[in-house]
Length: 499
Ligand SMILES: Nc1ncnc2c1ncn2[C@@H]1O[C@H](COP(=O)(O)OP(=O)(O)OP(=O)(O)O)[C@@H](O)[C@H]1O
Ligand SMILES: [Mg+2]
Image 1 (cartoon, protein in one colour):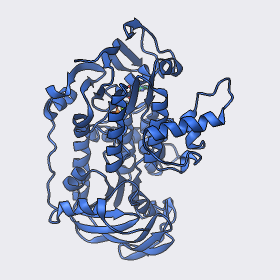
Image 2 (image 1 turned 90 degrees about the vertical axis):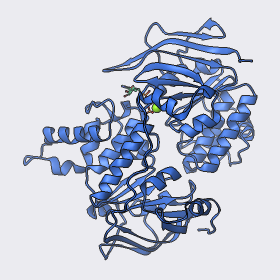
Image 3 (image 1 turned 45 degrees about the vertical axis):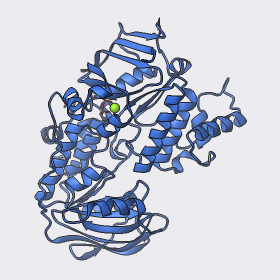
């Protein structure tokens, strides 16, 4: 029997200056169902869930029915009162507070915190997730994946009817994703509905009961998952079919550009040696937390090794500071682009041209408006950043489009060595193919690329060679063209070694 629809939203519109983010959208949620909200970057997904969770107010005319009664969600508090709580794309947690405080936040009565209750609520929420962690640890000391779990714990302790998650698996490793699926199944049994946003089709087919699709702020449709297959869903989202083509498999690797010899950093990575060639795409993979990001950051002066040597074009170099790395024409696009990659209060144009600003100054020291404009417009086109308004502030772009701005920002420097951490996290299926093509063509032109990726499909489609890390060490290295792909995946999960 179909479950009761307890939340019905219709005629939801949301206008921002110059953009109609939502245009008369509808959404309905059944008790205890898992409902996926899908659409391309900028389709309006995050905006819709901000409205349901009381973060933003829709344009007049919106109709929201809760158990058949008309309601409004004028504040986050009001929506929590109705049993609804959301985890947003940027998690909105506080790094300077403990795990327990983050879970408890906003519940204190009359400004007084009941510390006993705070600990109890945190312990109970983590227990429901079967997660063990020190509740008195500062949140900022935890990995992104653990922070995500804290956000979930907080949300389930507040949501009795509907838990909303905006791209919950983006930063999780394979096993953590499995754990999240388990959590979702558990909550479902407790008759709690889950609304989640994801760009990963396999995930949507695995866990959801129904899917609602948005496109350019408009409602496209809502379907039971059994009525759909992947290509139908892509068609609904993109309006055309997108094939995930395996890119030209020929390698363009030529002379050696980088050589890393036995670098180690206490607690991060141990005894790492590898080389990189011009025109090559080298993938670092392994589980989240295996030390991949820490290792590649070491090449950009962000996380300098305590031991070992690095050579560029055969000459020993110091990469202890970002400025040194930049002088050697190395660029780094971090995984957490939202926080590390962009200046959110600056326009897209200024973000993109910032790393090359000195080259764009005229003789009097003024920036050349025409040049910054044409340069940013070029990348807006190549990466299909939407909307293409170069004066719009970075913070006002959708999550996926912010990712693309961060990519553009470093590509303008035309580096010899490009390090990119999870190149397609959070970008939609059509843009993902575009970014892959772009990286492949940059390699063909001679750029040496190091990418960190947790997606095997991406590793195999894009890279020439793969390095598998586990516990801070390299456990396997092979060609992705000729090597045994099963062995690579096994090594990532089962390989030996400890930092
Ligand atoms: N505060 C804001 N000011 C101006 N425009 C905004 C603001 N917030 C969102 N937008 C615009 O609204 C549209 C929808 O954005 P939204 O964040 O809802 O997209 P999304 O579907 O979540 O995309 P993604 O998959 O990239 O996260 C985008 O065009 C975005 O640029
Ligand atoms: Mg979003």
